[in-house]
Image (spheres, rainbow, N blue to C red):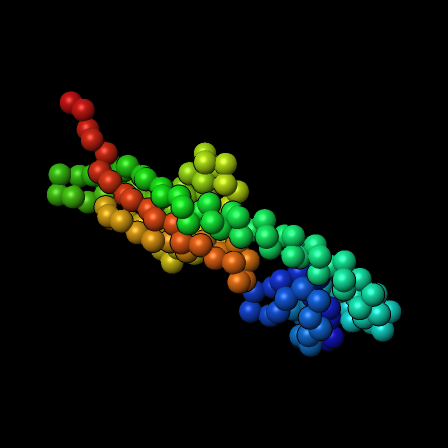
Length: 151
């Protein structure tokens, strides 16, 4: 099935690309989520006519995302977690924790943007990649420390 991507789709293509995908993928995933439309002759002509406006909008969006990426790269996050006597950390630092910390700093990031292979379950310093768009990425430094327990 031939489709036109309305937005960037990871591992498939960028907005405006004409792709051939399996019917089920298009019908059950791309089309219901408004990520693509059928590549009819009329739709192809409309996409070509609006290419200039779309390019300006994408350039403005990319500039804004570059600014956010710059702010993310300049940011470091600190987490404190309880630790047992033998040094084992109770709980972990997950994507949702990272998103909440960014929200406290007025930086809008979603869980899908955070590239954390597994939750952080040990004390230490980490670098986590934040992917805002396919080619706009930033790395944030995360420090996980032991929570001081007052007796």
